[in-house]
Length: 417
Image 1 (cartoon, rainbow, N blue to C red):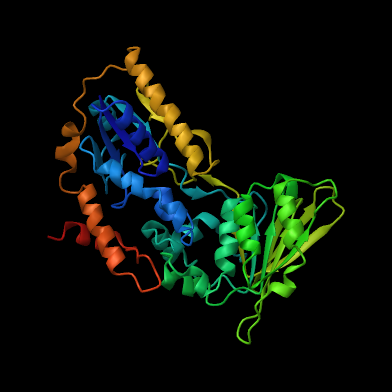
Image 2: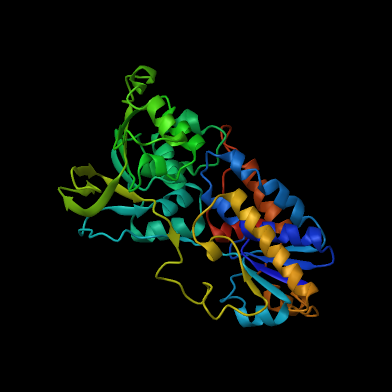
């Protein structure tokens, strides 16, 4: 059985892993548009959370097996038409994720500075396409000393933590130091995080919230806690809110960051005044109006394919009896890497059941049919290992790697002999 997986993030790699284990004779090719594998893990997981990125070690072992191939620097729909791919392989699995930040659906005045959390985190992770987008759009200016974050999921917490962290908190990370210095030349004086939900219904992980609240330079205030609120998130908030003053490590150089968490508020609009964005929100019952000044508003309200979806984005035509979807592309931007693994197992099981029951008939030649088209551009797993070695060897003493953020430079390193 020949299998093509489009996307080398955790969902795609987990499907490849399960298929390789349950069907050792299957020939699996994982296609990736970038020269580097691992998608969300490499570019989406926050750069200071290296433990979560450790899952790539098991994927390294996967690509070292003879029946699983990495085909990087290949964009399906551009370098290889989807129809050609589907004709060559018995099974196609789409695992491309949702790459773009979902936009706010409230009025925004011209001049209001609003950026997406996904773009920000990926740029801090040295994603080459995002860095190019940001430079072209002129959105790489400093975030400023007053930041508003809309959303209270894990991505919002990532942004708040990375904004508030001082340099020693990033030791061992692979953060893009050049970009960080541009957008965060100093820790903010104030960070406001706005959640539509109650504290009891907040979507962030308890451990991530606790990590944010225990930063030594943060003073936390919580607004919107109700007496009826309960649960693990509320317990953490009760423990830290309004008590961090005595824990703050003050210095002459750095003032503490005032972290204000607002629950049960709905955004109304974003105005612009005197070079700042003015965020207008209200409580759901309308009894309290919130007006916050911000140098930058960061949206962390989910992800989508975006308005620029084109021939390289999965469309309705990318379908058929032998085509499967997995991960965020299939179920929306919900769930962590472990949840992606569970779904990947279900998809792998469905593929094997369809083959056993005769709904999918094996016999297509797979990669050998498309290799002539890709021969002069494909990055193999061995090529990727050259990039990885170069990044690790180029790292400053307090970083685990210095990622290459330019695709042409990646290709130069990958093809060096």
